[in-house]
Length: 102
Image 1 (cartoon, helix red, strand yellow):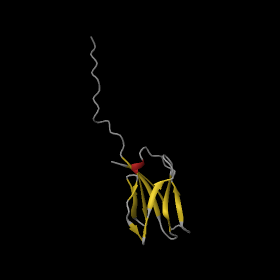
Image 2 (cartoon, one colour):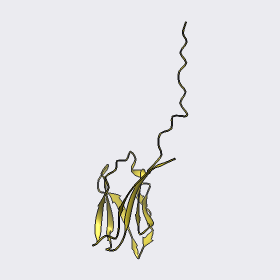
Image 3 (cartoon, helix red, strand yellow):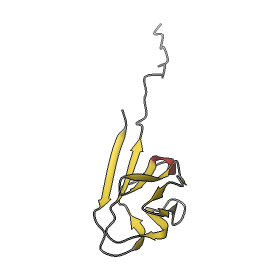
């Protein structure tokens, strides 16, 4: 099971290079970004996948920030989706200590 949180910028009105999301994350590798449904950012790196003639370089504006910066700018009319896909911590592998009462 994974925890999925999404913010979508539908049909942006003008070219835009920075997109901010409000949800928190523990690992930068949990954040993915899509332009017009095509994944352009995964595992904290650009995917080098072309979208409508553009190959985007995507990065966090600074370490730990909640803003992704795209170069070149995402063109007007595009839809941008940023999502967090993280796995919750599982405690099923932990062994509890045995307490002996004498």
